[in-house]
Image (cartoon, rainbow over all chains, first blue to last red; front, side, top):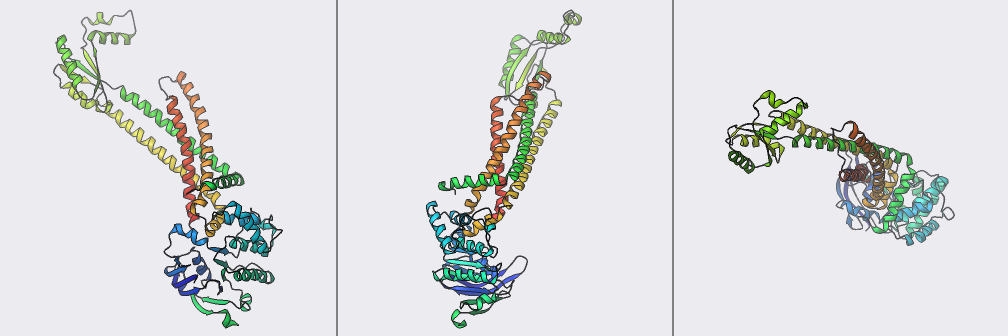
Length: 226
Length: 296
C-alpha cells in the first residue's frame, strides 16, 4: 500500500470545507484518476500527498510514514519520492530543457556525473530528443508538458502526481500526454492524476475516484469499467 | 547545513541572480550604502560626543580651601587624610602664592602687580583633588569637607549635577538613534531583497516541491545578500573615511577646541564594524524576506 487516507477532513482558515471525512487507499503500481468539478477537493487532496497542505483531522500515510506527524525537516525526504506535474507546467523560463530537468536533480543532491546521463535518458523517454537546448518559450504546450513530466520522473519517484496535466492542452495533445503517463505507469510508477477531462478518463480503463463537495461520490476500479 | 560540494553551485547561483537582476541589485546596494552611511555618521557622532563628554567630566575637580592658621605638618596631615579617602585619584597642593600668580596670569599684564594692589595675599592655601570616578565627586567632596582644617570645598556644585544629566541623556538619545537607524536599515533592505526573491518565487516553490531542503534554497540568497551588504558597506565606508579625515583636518585648524577622535585603531575598528554590519544586514534582510516563501 503506497497511500492511505483515514477520515481526512480539511477546513481552510477562511471556513471553506475542502475535504470531508475522506478515506482511501492507493496500491503501488496503480493508476488512479481523481475526478470532480472544480471546488470538489481534488487539488486539496493532491496537495496533501506532498504535504503542501495538512489535514485538519484524520491521518495520511505515504509509504507507511505519517505525513501528518512528519517534522518539517522530514518533508524534503517525502517529496523526493514523488514527482509533480502541473497544469501550467511551471518550467523555469530562463533555463533550457536540459537545465530544467538537471535543476530538479541538482536540488535533491544528485551527483553531477549522474545528472548528465539521466537527463539524456528522460529526454529520450518523453520524446524530446533534439529539443535539449530549447527554452520553454520556444516549445509548444504539449512539448512543455513533456519537459514537466521528464522533470517529475528524473528522480525516479515512487509516486507521480499530475494535477490537471492536460488542462491547458488540446485533445490530441492531451491524448499523447496520457499515453506518456500510461507508459510511465507500466514501468512501475504509481500515478495519481486529478482531472475533469471526462473524455480522456472514460476510455482509459483505470480506477476513477470521483469527489463532490469534499466527499467521495464514487470509487470505481478499472475492471468494473470494462 | 551547507555541504562543501554545493559551495560552487551556491556562488554561481548567487552571481547569476545578481547579474540577472542588476537593477534590483543596484537599488539594494544604494539603499545599503545610504543606511550604513547614516549609521556610520551616527556612530562617529556618538563616539565624538562621548569623547567630549568624557573630557568635560574628567575636568571636574574638588578644591579644598584650608584654614589660614595651619602649620606645615598639619597641612601634610590633611593631605594624608584626603589620600586615604576612597575614590581619590590625585591630590595636588596649590599654595596661596601660586594661587595669586594664577590670578595674576589671568590679567595678563606684566606691568600691573596684583600683589601690591592687594597688599596682603587674601587667597588661602588649597588642595586640588581629582576623583577616580567623576560621578562620585559630590560624595567625595563631603568627605573632604569633613576633615578638620578644611573650611570649604568647591567643585562646581549644581553645575556638575546638571552636566551629568545632560551627558546621560545625550548618550541615551544617540544610542536610541543608532538603534532606530539600524532597524530602519533592516526594514529597507528586507523590502528590496523581497522584491528580488518575489521575482523568483516560482523557482523557490518548485525547489521546495521537488524536495530540496530549506538551506539549499537559502544559501544562494544569503550569499547574494552578503555580497550586496558588503559592497554597499564598502562604498559607504570609503565615503565616510574620506569625508571624516577631511573634517578632522579642517577642524584641527579652524575649531581646534573641539577635539575630534582621530585614533586610527578606533576608526579602523569602526570601519570594519560597518562592513560586518553590512553583511549582517544583508543576511537579516534576506532571512526576513525569504522565510515567507519557504513555507511550502
